[in-house]
Length: 409
Image (tube, helix red, strand yellow):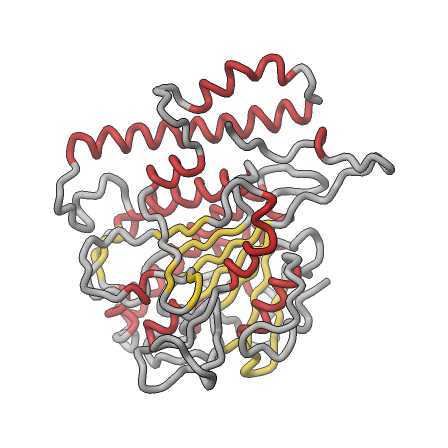
């Protein structure tokens, strides 16, 4: 079986003949160790926030993104700041409460949402992670933002081949899933409108493209994979190609209604081993760069890494925005956040967290602007607002003081 994209034929309200509102999708993208502040945050009163060097790649979807300032999380002193940044990012548990782990962890927002909406889709939630490191010297807390509960990690998927197999598993058949579907598509298409035929063709074409990429990748691994495969030189894709493929798989999962909940780590939080940024022509430790950004040359390299990740995030948004769905695009029917658990990677501050929200959540969020929140507004206020938009019925989340004011249109 293969899930199909949203189609008009299944969306008419019997009594009114109006199109039903497409289901809302939720995704949280995580970029580690904050961003260079003066390349990310505009001066107070600046309306064109996408003129900032790091945010400029988002201009293609300028009217569908919102920059939020003033959000913070409590930094629990005496425990590793990076571990709590990533592992507690989507839970924001009360740091003054009774903790069941070394860090203020709890069930994360994605799973609280999936508890309520997963009945709509074949896959409950999708946890994606673009960490290619094979060394195990760093802790599990640095490599996961999705948790079922304290100390109970929702293991993320890092191999695009395995992600593809989960989305489009064909069992024991040797045929590509698109070949299997197309064998039966002729009779099915006779019942479709021209619009729905175009949607089906668009979706199957996208799946086939990824299928062919995965096939090439699998052949490479079959020839060259070793038991001790090290990062980065033996990886057959560049850093950008790898993240781009994982992003495309997420788009297909949302387009095909395979899941409505996902998390996406662009990179791990604080990893000591240098990483090869092929497109930037250097191999650097991202963590090391953050602690030396007082030097102009280091700050320049760090800002390039920041922009590189925003460029790849923007590509995902543009793909979603290119897919027509109902009275709008797939991006219009999404609630997607890009953020980090640190406001500043050098000083380890958790105030003024860098947060971008994309998509209008079916027109409910006012986009294309800066939302300046009062200083030290809990990040949990944003998570509570998103949980409510996703239909959870929650009235409180972690240390929230209420849903984020000013977010809705």
